[in-house]
Length: 125
Length: 167
Image (tube, rainbow over all chains, first blue to last red; front, top):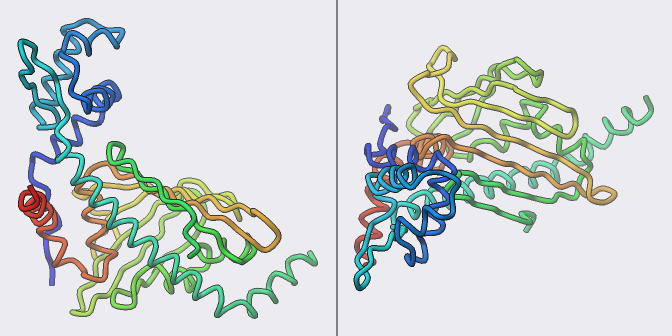
């Protein structure tokens, strides 16, 4: 049974490429509250407004943030769904390691006697 | 319950699991250093692992495969980057071809293992896994879960469908 594991739609590659930059990750964090526009966001970074605008465009293209109208302003807001996918996969990976650690424990209990002998030998060196 | 802490960073695609064992540092080290022991815990009973090449020396390559219930054998490898017996291992690897050579089309992930004594006969192990992409995570999950490869195929689609239904 050979099954391809190339299953991530291209959008997800874009999501993680977009998150590969620390300024963009910071924008995603700040935009969770959805209170600031591009101009306010730009004030947090030691770079030009145009540079921040470019980062925002990359994030928007990846679906990580959206621009929303609040009254007369346009605020930048994080789209949590994209981050959720990563979190769900991390949850699965956590289960995998918990199962491994359970097996390690069983193995330690089972081989306690044998390894103690080795340790005694080594401590005599 | 020996897992003492779990940290997940979805933005950096990093998982850190910390566990404490009633065993000496040396015994925990042997779980990684002895391939016959490694085989006992790396894969689940339905997907046991076989390490065909195992030498914990910086610069060497560990080669293994897993055997699924349908006879499928996904291969994997780890390049050994750092080793400080009996405390620290850094490995980087991914999927391999059947002859053991790395499958260069597939993404590479990194595992950092730190082992330290917290009290006499009590040892803490921290395992940090860093993935370069969501694809890499899926690949690792596909190789290491009891469900095997087939069920990982439409994982993303399933998750998305579920999220949509919940709305």
